[in-house]
Length: 293
Image (cartoon, rainbow, N blue to C red; front, side):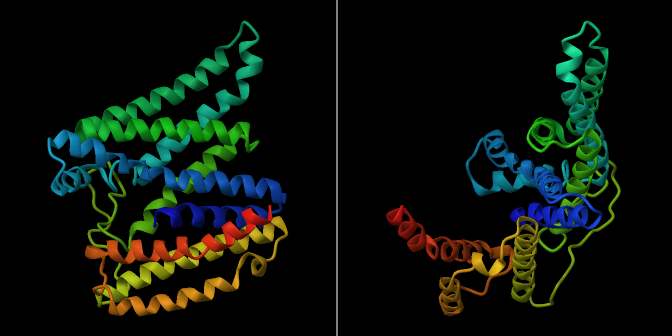
């Protein structure tokens, strides 16, 4: 659901902004920012190399041991989302004031906003370190650093106000955990508090294979929703973005006879095979365009 997190936030934010009367360009900027913040919680995948090295082995067990500590915990929390959104808003406010304030002797407003943002984010890092150890602190630090970068980009390139940055950051970060409810372990929604809202994932079907396929179709539907919203906001036709070669993907059905029935526990073959079909299909079109150019 990594791609789906960002695309769903983009589609809902951009469509909602346009519905309330924002311009197409502003709606797109808000949607892109929300989508970027919605993917931010998955920065915790950095636990993979760090956790494996820290475990002193390159075995798979080291990966999962580290993952159980921080993945879907440190950055997948409504509490963290609310606090971080406030900090990113302050950071972006300092970004908008930077040029005018620092050119003057009175740069107190810039320092105040930047100081609040850094203080709040450092507080999150310290708490993550106390609750989840050095690995948790590292993940939270990466989360804070990348988040500040996104806030800066939203102001400089998206032309968003600090208030808008706070809102899209909150929506993107808070929407992320919902996409994880059907895959793997449910997120720790109230981290760092030891309170469990959901102890089991949402089951789409009793059969594990049908459950995986259901999650796959949700992801696919999210991609199409984002495509439709983007096309509507840019004046393009969805049909123009679909090539007849896509119908050849139906042949992938034959893969059912070549690979074991996939489940969440053994989904790698299924995911990699789907990605392979998606990559190989457009290659002739890309080469054709390059030759014409």
